[in-house]
Amino acid sequence: MVVYYEWVMETMDGDDIVDVDHADTYADAVRRASNGARIGLVRDHDRHDDGDAERSWAYITDGRLPEWFTDAGDAPTIKVPKRFHREVTNHN
Image 1 (cartoon, rainbow, N blue to C red):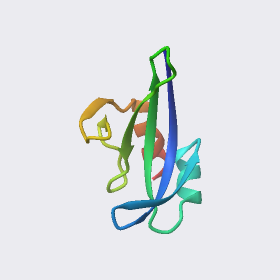
Image 2: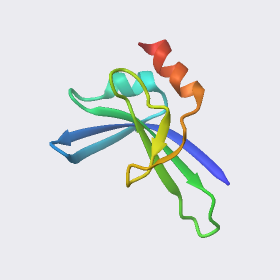
Image 3: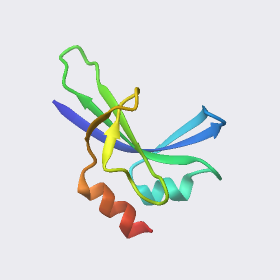
Image 4: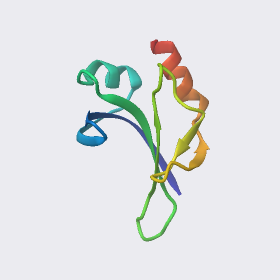
């Protein structure tokens, strides 16, 4: 079982994602994000022998991460680790 986290910057056109970039730290994501890009934390959880990963997201809202990651259907999946909350708070 492998869990991998990365910061994502998504340039939006309405509700459509038109460009995606990734960063290792929140500070780097903020620095590199284009004007108006939304920033989030992606969690990939590979727990299947066939290589399929479960992916969930937590997007910054009003300068804060939500308490829970959500899946593609917007259902809560797992709590966002405290270290990422601290990373955001320490940067802001």
